[in-house]
Length: 492
Ligand code: AMP
Ligand code: MG
Image 1: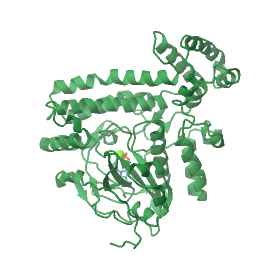
Image 2: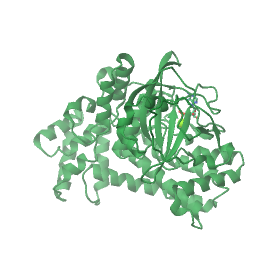
Image 3: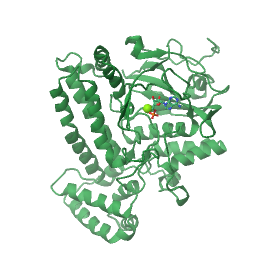
Image 4: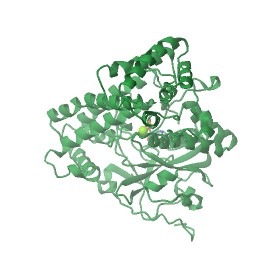
């Protein structure tokens, strides 16, 4: 292997976990090396720490080589996995890691198992007619959003590094290519189970369920009803994740079952979007003409996807148990969302009338097209003179109604004195989310001007979303007129 003498010492405890499954679950292969001189654009110190790497490793000449596939991780055979999935409601019998390559599974110091995966490192047997590559623009979006979501407290895969391949990728035009290294608590998706179920390979469904339970749900491993208990847990985690999306105003954009993690973490950042104006019908994915994955559809689609998973598990779990677990979804989603929203409103306990009060504001925001993030961020100060007027400004022509709502809200708060209410609210209502225009600003800076400083400032803003950081104020703003209605599609 072509390793320099001072090779980067990863010090990883590798665990060849997924490849304990039979060979038809995956293909062992090497990355296709793109470009001659991979260049590290940015790396996340927080993500690195998860797998025992110190940020000092980023400067090592091996680092961009390892995290673009130019060097192999010593002692580990990289692989891609096969899965299937329902795409926009239609079953596609074979998908898979078409441009993702797992180059290590690392047992971290805290006991967590992380899949280290290169996204965009070339073709695999599951690439179908595509090239296995990723363009820089979508890689910047995935890199930033992974780390932003983690900082927001939303369950998510992480991003370790963004490496430019310095080679063109053919799309509508030639575009710069990149590789994102993501860290996944698991790469197993609903679609992995669907693949084997729909091929009538029930024994493989069981093998995969056993693997997932032993590896990720060890507390269930010995239980008599372990499969049913595990499925119920997957349903609960999915409801939890989607409640977190709704509270923070995140739309995933491609909630196909191949993009649903078995651990309930957000996975596969493509044409996602954060709400600017509050608009329940918000469609972030330009290719989603029917609005199947519109913002307000996400909770229902989460359940639809759990149904598809349940279908794939019918050989393993009695139908009554599957139905019982599915029946808990709505209640769990609703109670999680209400708890998250109560915290955003600064309510320590819920009383009669609180849900209508909260919905009252959302209705006004919808009418006024008030900015979702700014409205909640401003709420902790809306009781004071200056804060009130700035907050009401968000409502334009609906100002008087917003003022009336604020009156009843403040009266409700007066009933429940809390000394640290503002601080609590600011700790759950972000100032910075990765708005589309902000992501686009990062892309243009890097792509057009090689300006990594702007990317770094945006990274700092979205990974410290609850701080004030006045030097980063510009990235908290709603989209400037010139950057309204940017469209994002799947062609990445
Ligand atoms: P996505 O909609 O990005 O989740 O992708 C759906 C499927 O298409 C997955 O199996 C991906 O691996 C595959 N895919 C997407 N883009 C590419 C690409 N450029 N090369 C190979 N496979 C791809
Ligand atoms: Mg995908």
